[in-house]
Image 1 (cartoon, rainbow, N blue to C red):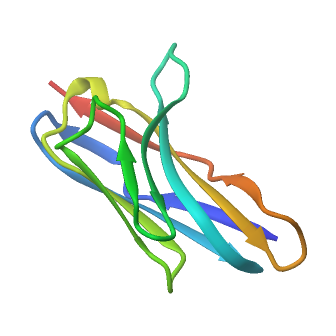
Image 2 (cartoon, rainbow, N blue to C red):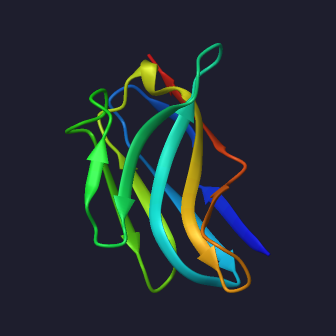
Length: 120
């Protein structure tokens, strides 16, 4: 069994900061890529930021310069530091991991999401 658990969501005022964390646990052999997505009410889920096992990163244009993704390969964790937040950042944030369990082939796994609300 593999589990992804997000934490750190909540309510913040515009211009403020939040830090999200995603912890992967279970029978994990390796993690290739960890990605944060978000889904705002009435909108499609969109990629926010991704980081590979080699720490290569990419960001959505909407968050470049404000958000920073990082990971701890030893702890199987990924973090998303969100600064200078805007009301448009309001969404449920989901962690996604492309990983290989010991017992199976590489596949994508999702967390249950953590809500972020940015008030104006």
